[in-house]
Length: 381
Image (cartoon, rainbow, N blue to C red; front, side, top):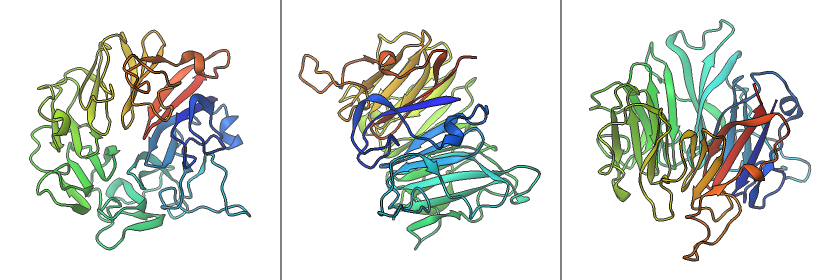
C-alpha cells in the first residue's frame, strides 16, 4: 500500500487531487480504489513523468495511469462524463490497441505527448524479430515528437513507432523534455526524435527529426540519458563516469560540465540545468541558477533527488525532504519571501511536517515535473 501526494501547478488538474487549483501543501491524489487499497507489492509507483499539463504514473506492475489535460491526446483515449467533464484524478490509460499480455516498462513525456516502451510477458513475444520491446506514442507535436514520421502530428491512440528499436536490441532507458525524446539501447547506442535544431539530437541539427535517428559520434557505451529544454545529457557507467552533452550551451550547460562524474548514483535535468547525485551522497549541479535552481551547500548527504522544470527536491540520508528553486506555483512548498523580496525561490524548505503521513509509513519515492512535485509514502519495511 502507498499514499501518493502532490503539490504545485494544477491548472489542468495535473496533480490528480480532485480540483484545478494550485496548492503549496501536499495533497493526497485520487487513485482507483483497486490500487489505493491494494497490498500487492507490484502496486507501487515506479515512475512519475509530467508533460506541460498532464501526468503519467507507472506502477511496478506495468499498469499506467494519467491525469490532467486530455485534449491534446497525451493521455490517450478517454470517455467524458455526462456533463462533458472529467474529475481531475488518476485513471487508467487506454492501452487496448497494444498487444495482449503487454505491459509498460518505460515512459516519458514531452510538453503535449507521451511515449511508452512496451515489453512482453507471460511468454508472449511481441516482436520476435525485433527483441522484446516496442515503442508507442500518443498526443500532439508538430516537430516530430511522436516519432511517427512526417504528416502525423496528433493521435489519441497509442500508435506503434515502426521499425524501432533495431532488430535484436532492447531499450534500457527513455527520457524526454519539452520537445524531444531519446532512447538508450542495451548496446549503448542512443536514438532520438523530435526537436533538434539546437543539436540536442546530434548532427545534423534540424528543426524536426520525424522518426527515430541514431546519435552518432559517441565514444562510450551510454547507459543513462536525461533531457533539458534544448539539450541532452548522456552518461556512461558509474565506474567510468563518462558524459557528453549535446545541444544548446545556454547557462553553460555544456561548457561548465565536469570532465567526468565517476560514482554517479542518480541523475536529473531541469529545463536549463543538470544534477548528479554521487554514491557518497554529494550532489553536483551546473547550468541555470537565476532562481536558485542549483544544489545547495547546506543540505547534507543526499539519498534521492527529483528534478523539475526549475526546482529540485532532495531526500537526505537523515530522511529530511527538501525543496528549492522557482516555486511560484507552490511546487516547493509554502511560499515565503526572502530578504530580497523574491517569492521564495532561494529558500530551502523542509517538507516533512507538511506531508500527510500515517504511522508506520516513510518516503519511498519523490518526483518532480513542470512546477509539480510528488511524494510517495510507503509502509516501512
